[in-house]
Image 1 (spheres, rainbow, N blue to C red):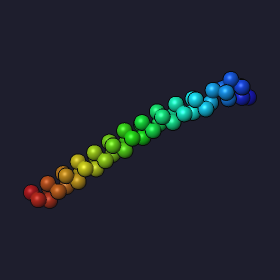
Image 2: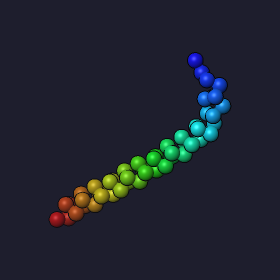
Image 3: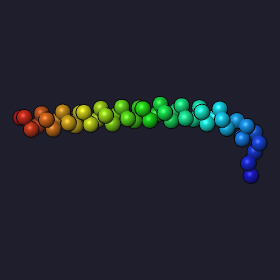
Image 4: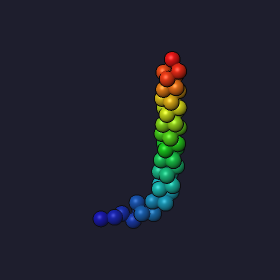
Length: 49
């Protein structure tokens, strides 16, 4: 059973949800990149030691 009210509000709600998801996605990507750079740096330091 679908409510007409929910259907009418879906576009704005969907766009808002996309915006939040996009921000979270960028945070996750930046975090993973930072972790990767840190791990690579540690490996390089250990290999040179």
